[in-house]
Image (spheres, rainbow, N blue to C red):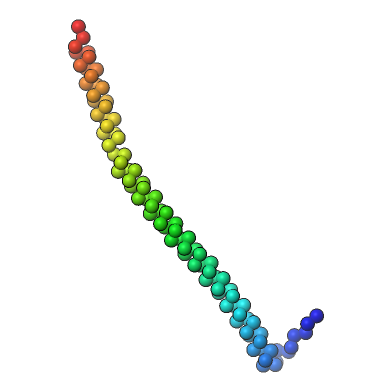
Length: 89
């Protein structure tokens, strides 16, 4: 078992303060690293969201003619039906 020097000794106090300082520095370094990683992941997520929004806008813009085409096909079908009905003997 190790015995610790009494804290009334200035050298022991300085040594203990240095250990505490080193422990705090290590903790701050870990925290800074974790925060940097979170910021990087946040930036990547923002870029992915922007890319998905861009792709969705492209899909929405490309989809607008579909109802128009469906209505046009329906009208052509109606016209052909009326023509067939009118030209029957």
